[in-house]
Image (cartoon, rainbow, N blue to C red; front, side, top):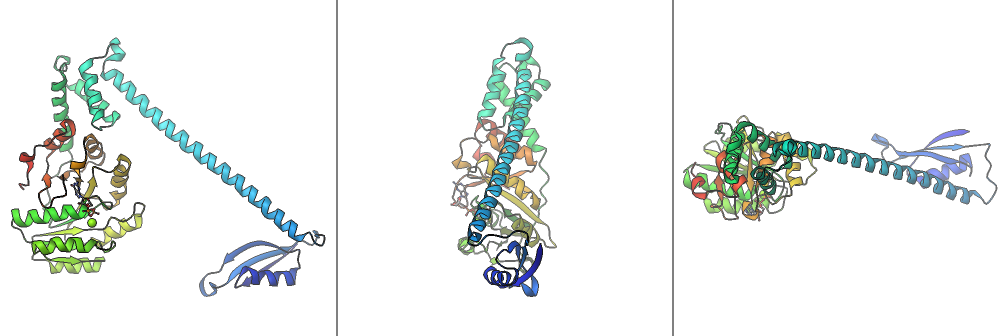
Length: 388
Ligand SMILES: Nc1nc2c(ncn2[C@@H]2O[C@H](COP(=O)(O)OP(=O)(O)O)[C@@H](O)[C@H]2O)c(=O)[nH]1
Ligand SMILES: [Mg+2]
């Protein structure tokens, strides 16, 4: 076997050299593009097996057969990998699902008292199904009922409405545990996937701070990514006569923050970008670094699918966001899923928005109001109208 290395501008140029030096029996072992100064060239490793003489006229056929054989090997490898992956995923999914189901059913049987006396204790099972129907996960509904039973005497758990009241206050308490005192940060940024309502929410809050709280407001947008994104905000800023600046990197952001030093509050809009863009989020996090603390609010639309919402709260973890803002409640009919998210991320909900109207469709919410919304599908507008 004779082995030789070639450099050429193209495969065909290399083949001419190889054929002339190693003869028509030569076979190509590998090709790769060179780097650095030689990046215009490719490297080809070729060999000639002197023991293997192809009879005249059969060369083409052999090459063709080689390719077919190689392709069929690759194909069967790919198929095998594919089925391995499928089985692996299926096994994992089925396993997780079964474990979850087992836990849920086991817990449920205990909670509803079925395991003990074989009877369904009706108001409790009614409450369980009610919670699940609001969008609260089966596991969380089960945990809530378990706690409910543990902390209340059985005679208090005979009436469905009363059970719901207790559940509402339990949910309120558990949400409250994630609330922290507002930091009064002067710079507040809105982050989240595209289309969730960041810009609209920012405009609503700018109007609120300006007209209701009589504060000096400044707006910065880092959304230079989407055409027209800055224009949308500029229009709002012009109507409110509030200064609005565009920053496309950290240096500019810091400079503009300094320039807006006279403002009581600076609201920062950011681009959403595509879903699988970790690099973008790390970059955004660095762009938002200043000497002053920046509060970040993850904006999540209630019209997103559960999967997308879970995906968003997970992906945006990298930004270590401070609050959640739920938008588009007006387009949603049940709110139990909010509890799954709140309980998962343990971050306070700062505002909810329920319409496209700027500035009116936004409300500050406290844990009690959220619990009422989650359990009873309603929020008392008068209670929470923009008052702070
Ligand atoms: N129904 C409803 N629509 C909203 C709400 N908030 C925002 N939107 C709409 O959602 C769309 C995307 O909003 P936008 O603020 O541009 O989202 P961004 O990409 O996150 O900045 C726009 O059509 C808004 O009018 C809300 O609370 N309810
Ligand atoms: Mg926007």
